[in-house]
Length: 142
Image (cartoon, rainbow, N blue to C red; front, side, top):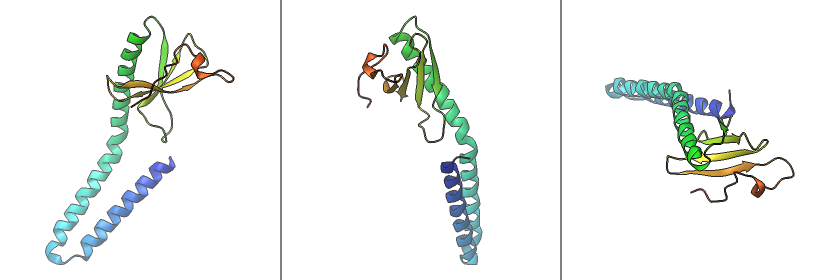
């Protein structure tokens, strides 16, 4: 498990523990309501951790389709492979593109929505300047 995930789970567990301890220490009149609130919060946190990977996968699939449409317009007749960056520390909406006619190069596109797609990072082979790439786009991402 990635360290960021462990920290998120530990912080959530600490919050849940604090909520339940506080609920049991409250006067009897409001104890039942506070235990229900702590239980509801626990269920919401568990749902968050259970559903988040599926939501991110759905969003990445949508962003990949948007990037493919963008590249079809910008580079017609060319072939490329789109892949997400692997690892928890990376933004899942930054997608790597490797063009078939430019081996060794990796371009990273930032995909916000259909209208806001830009090349944010490029990785050329060793000893070559980024501006020498066939698909190099010099522009600022907003």
